[in-house]
Image 1 (tube, rainbow over the protein chains, first blue to last red):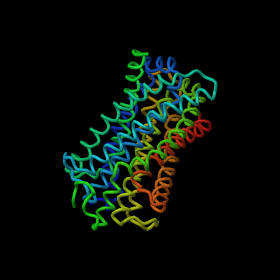
Image 2: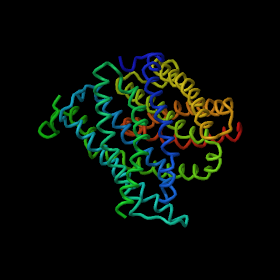
Image 3: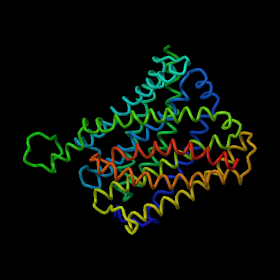
Image 4: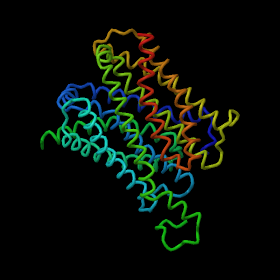
Length: 190
Length: 201
């Protein structure tokens, strides 16, 4: 049971998911290097600067949501079922608030950094892109995370071993894709 | 175990503590300052990456290596933190070399790192060649494995330290350890990768 696995158990449970995440990582690297993305990077000052922070907060916000739900399941505080349990909805709402707040914060500090080092930057444009990308990734990450944890837990998989890879995989691939969507949406409005 | 709200049962202290631990306010207030500070740190890492842009662009294999390497380190870090935290709550965690649970965690991290960073090296070399790169397989593989194993050491040390500190300070390790350790691995991953690249390439 949880916490008493051998190194071999952990290895065997984690490896397939990590390998899938690896393929997805290579895929997201390719999106990042694509013509469209590079055009976006050169058109919007600050995009390259905020990219690591944006991707990292996906992991921070939704990785900890996953870890919290996993511990909650192990402790018996929440049920692996889709119902409106107050602890479950609290955790989800909090991670949504965290995700959106930090996205806007990143846009602001990126703008300040650009100003500090004498480059041109558009605060409204950066905030707009981060709000769109942050919202889309929040909706996607929360839905998929809950589905994976609950279904996995009911099938006897220890969520602790799979949350990390699932979060980083989806966070990177969809983070970069939603960043592109954000650039398109804001570009169409501004 | 009542699942609806915290009002009405003031006498049941243990339950109230659990509900408090799961309140929106508490989760947001624990995490926002941390996430904000880490974003600033990531901005520095973004700037570092930007200064190496030329080296990266001229060697596409290394460019591919950057996000994958960091992502995998993050995976290993969150598995380790998540497991250590659960073991902490279940009472099986103890910081001692003879603790079988701790040894299993560490053993698995190194086995996974060896497997994955080997595969990463080959894949990055292949994609690099497809993109017109000139670096040889041996060199890309060496860069991937050396920097990967150094990162694995960092993952283990940082995860244990983060769980210990967070527990002693009184913060929920579920909220604090993963953001701290994955961000540390992001920034250190870039630095380690470039240190190894400057020696090998």
